[in-house]
Image (cartoon, rainbow, N blue to C red; front, top):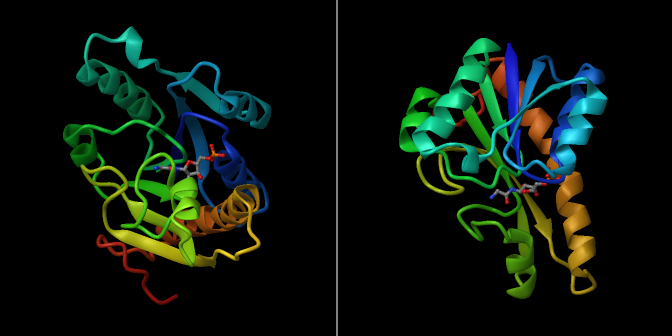
Length: 198
Ligand code: GAR
């Protein structure tokens, strides 16, 4: 089975996926990194890991359809079965989502539907929420939305700084995302995201 990771930034989840594959915990071939930001640190991480990088800048295409057609061309070339969004800060079109329905996963640093968007950790921290967490879900046409696969809760302690909360969330993400992808690989996810017993 072939995986493509889509990312726009730092790439710590990308590296967690690479590590899980190297350790034999995740049995999938990471064929491609699709990145839309030329300066993103994730590009260097992919180069170091020997993963092919495809840089697609939205500005280089006249329309979103053309932009996504270029991506789909690369996915087909590499016979990609599953897409993992890992900090990919762009909404995919309904056409793209329907072409890869239940084959696109996303990780988000909150207990969805709470705190959608690009600043979820900060939003939960500022709201002085008692809990937040991490969600992995299948992607549908809306932002940070679609059938839930896994959620894990984290307590926000009064002693937490924003930095310590971020650290806790990222540590959890790095375990949860490879695990969720392996559930898919081993055929343990129903189309509504429910996990079947082993
Ligand atoms: C992760 O925390 C991920 O959950 C979040 O972006 C970060 C990417 O970090 N995604 C979203 O907020 C999606 N709405 P990384 O580049 O270090 O993997």
